[in-house]
Amino acid sequence: MSKRRQEELNESDSDIDVSSTDEEVENGEEQVEENETVDVDFDFFDLNPDVDFHATKNFLRQLFGDDSVTFSLSDFADMVLKDGHIGTTIKTDGKESDPFSILSVINLSENLESPSVKKLISYIFEKTSKKAQFNVLLRQLLSPKSKFKTAWVISERLINMPVETVPPMYKMLIEEMEKAENGHENYDFDYYIIISRVYKLVNSEIDKELGEDEGRSKRSKKTNADAPQYDYFHYEDEVLESNAMHYGYFDFTNKNLETDARRVFNDYGIDPQLSVLLLDKKSLANAAAEMAEKFPPY
Figure (cartoon, rainbow, N blue to C red):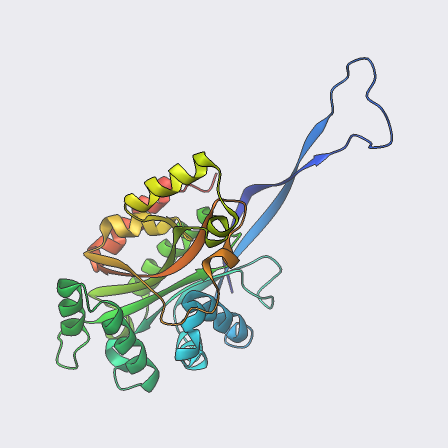
């Protein structure tokens, strides 16, 4: 069932040069450029187990990058898409089409005996091991003896999806958790773990081998002396981080591509990093409200 439609999220698709290459520009006339605007209607749907399985697996594979081989993505997809589960997808061609975005939760506390969840928890413990306070708190929350309920928030989308589509999804997720018939049993969470990605800018090995001009060399030396530069794949993560109790960036275990292989139109290589955040119930609600203010739909 369609939840709601967010219209008029317009993106500038391209600048098209309509001047002919076969004709000369006469009398000082300037080239004419026109901006072509593509209007896209994004429809919000409930999760559809009959259609969304493969797309959900692909989103999880994208989320974990080269480390995705560590996990049974099918098990996670089944947990997300089980009958009656809450969450939202964004589609543009009806409920039977493939989703462009997904936002849902998995109840980690009630699935501690699942082999897939055990492997995920062990992975998170390993990644956060050098952040003592973060790691200790996670171990307490994800202990079988813990009195707190902890969820894993799964949020992923195609790379060119606008961030403005995210706040409505979080709003709907929180409302669904509050209104679900079995909400108190399954969705009354105390804490939320959000796994995401950032990328670190690193100096290009190719430039070093080919030789840099003096200006770029000086800039590289300065960059080496400074703290690492990071940026977001998902811009809402900045809001989530500002509300998080703990967060950190961590190297992926498997790295199958050199950083220069991900270099596009810039002077640096791209080193993707795992991002792990922990928020409590109140801070997630605050983050959702801040997202709506920072990334309005129009």
